[in-house]
Every structure is written in structure tokens, then in C-alpha cells.
Amino acid sequence: MRRYNDTDIAAIYRVIEQRRDMRHFLPEPLEPALLERLLRAAHLGPSVGFMQPWRFIRITEPALRQQIVTLVDEERQLTAEALGERGSEFMRLKVEGVRECGEVLVAALMDRREEHVFGRRTMPEMDLASVACAIQNMWLAARAEGIGMGWVSLFNPDQLGKLLGLPSGARPVAVLCLGHVDEFYSEPMLQQEKWATRQSLDALVFENGWRHEEEASSPT
Image (cartoon, rainbow, N blue to C red; front, side, top):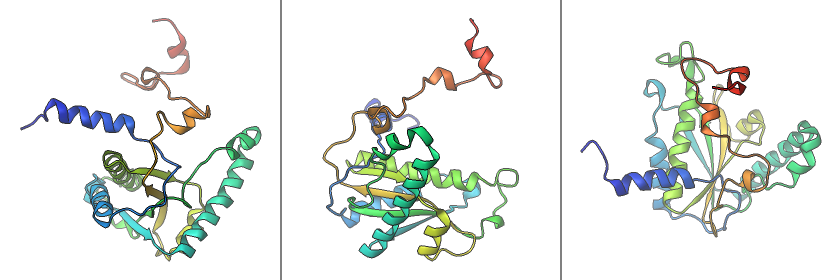
């Protein structure tokens, strides 16, 4: 069967639309079988040259989780400074749930990636794109399971890599918070908090080349 039935198709579009970057969690741990399903979903992600560059590190030691919290807090302060006049507004946002969530995973790029040339000779960043695809797989599976997930990028990757003992060449790219939630946000949280709004699709889809600002603003 090439095409899924209408019910299944609707479910796929619904989980895509209702996926949220969650920051509020309940502390209960995930069932081991559920966590394995989510990791397996990630592992089924596409990767350039089938290199499968993702590595997932599960954080189970409370002291290590607290060290990650400290790194996130440090970067949060630096980000606020870099934002200038929006810094105080940023500091009022809840930007992560590392302390509260049931599970913390660190997604990292493997080492020795330079050996993988297929699809990366002119675009070496495709290894990062592949890890992002794996994370998105996990995100959608988590939403379908009723589990919240948040992607935290507020950290110094060199410091986190050293903390986790990553080999030379490997690089952490995401701290992933997973856990049960009271409810999912009705819309993206940063949109709820008036930080930004989703752009229109029409503004981001071009035809036969880049649409420059003057072209976009001129009458059809």
C-alpha cells in the first residue's frame, strides 16, 4: 500500500502541528520501554550517506544533571547580555526544563566524521542536519506518546563535551528534556509569550530563485 489511510494521514499531520518545544514538566521518570521506543524512533532518522552520526548520552546522575543546569544558567546570562535591550525580557522567559524533566539526554555528533565523504564533500554540515532529523523523529514520537520534549541549546559545547568526556572531534549539539506534562502549550511558547510569531508560509517559499525584498514588496 503506497498511501496510508486517511485516518493515519490525519494523525501524522496532527502530531506535526501539535509538536511543542516544552519547558514545563512533571518529575515522574519515563518507563524504560517508552524511552527505548523514543530512542529507536530517533535512530530511524535519515542521515546523509547513511553515516548515522548521532550519539545519545542519557544523564542519570543527579550531580551531573546539576552541572548541566549550571552550564545552561551561565549561557542564559551571556545570551541575555548579547540580546541588549531585550535581555531583561529574555530573562523572564522559561527557556528550559532540565531541572524538572523526567529524563535528560544529550545528543552529540560522533567523532571521526571527516572519514564520511558521501554527501558531505562540499556540505560537511550535513552531519548536523542528520542529527537534527533524528531529534525531530524523537520529538514527533514523543508528542504522539503524550510525552513532552524540549531542545536546549543554551550551553558552551566545549565545556559540555569536556564534562561528558566526549572524544576529540565529537560535539554536543542538544540537551534534550523529556517527561510527562500537565498539558501541551496551545501554541509555541515563544509565540504565547509574545517573543516572536510564526511567519507566513508564503513569505518563505520562493520560485525559481531567491525572492529579494524589493520583489516581495512590489505588487504582483
